[in-house]
Image (tube, rainbow, N blue to C red):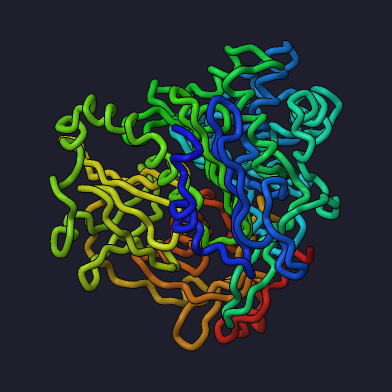
Length: 563
């Protein structure tokens, strides 16, 4: 494995999308903790024609989690924080986290609802600047978890915001200051920081770009003044020091690094597949630790092979970039011999026994995967459908995602840096799992179709519904003969019936109405991918004029937040 192994034509083909007049990427390839190749493609700032270089500073989104996790683990190693002590004493204002430990948050088995989903449901828009206090305040209002702590894995950002706040409460230093003093300065990462202020200037910083509906290029940066699950700004040149640190730590014990690479366990002993800010698994038979990141139009991926001492980091400033796919293609090229040896050792028949089908599925063979899937114990469903010889994942409210076969029961999401797989175990429903950047993002199981019931009158659902946990109100109203859900600042969208009392809505929302003992609709439960069964109580009485207006008009909700 040498620099000569990476020919210019090979890289040109991988980054052909990064033109000289548009956004692009920075690439870092590291061997033994040292840069093997550092290169930039495209522009960091289109307005000023500033090219991307190895020193360009990128927002790397969820790659931040491994650094936040390291800081938490470092405090534990210093005896300043107990990873297995519930957080109630540190956060009395967040009752729902009273029995949750830092370790459970690190491994994403806390059951906490996700902050980005909560902010969206509360009416926040992309351009609204989000602060730590906003997120912690929302967490403090929550009265239910998605699931009992420790019973399942679910990738959640809220917990890492809480961990960042824990660092400040233990040390008296914000995460930005603590990481600078304890980590970035000792490692020589002089162009790396946590940006916890939206207006903090950073020299050489890249902007992110996305295409608008009319095809024009627009700046698309995250509006964050928060750090922990995100907020890290760094360069591929600085990241060499981080990779070196993970191989040969100088400011902590080797045991701490080993703990970062050890998957957590659920209450029943099952693995989460996730260490401290790193997804732990295998790629083509080799051990990998990796993570993906995506905020606004920034995309990032860090893929490391600890045994082979090879790592790849790719930071992009356009949402159409597939850094995870590119990182794997680079690894395929540089580790061809190691992959070949691993393939010789693999027990292929044992692995294939869990897959549906023995060959790459095509045509009608794809019908085997079709049906409804939901989280075990949950109510909200996604559909896998077959159309025109192709397979699609169809979440509530859309959009639909085409699934391209990559193996007997594995697929890639076209246009996304994500994958999925179908598994079957004897006597169990088919399992459907999705992955992003090596991290499992969902695990669903097939459910049998239900007999269609008699639909309830649409007027049953009309009303105003209040959420104490979000401090907002939603309005369900009629537009003609159709129901719409009006979310104030987030707009009004049609409710699409799925089953009696169950609806889907744009933005990936699932809506389930609850009835009281008399059969009247009394509440509405709203779910997204990472916020489950958020309760809205129906207002008990409406004046006659208000009731009449709601039956014929979907106007703006008076209960929506003003921020």
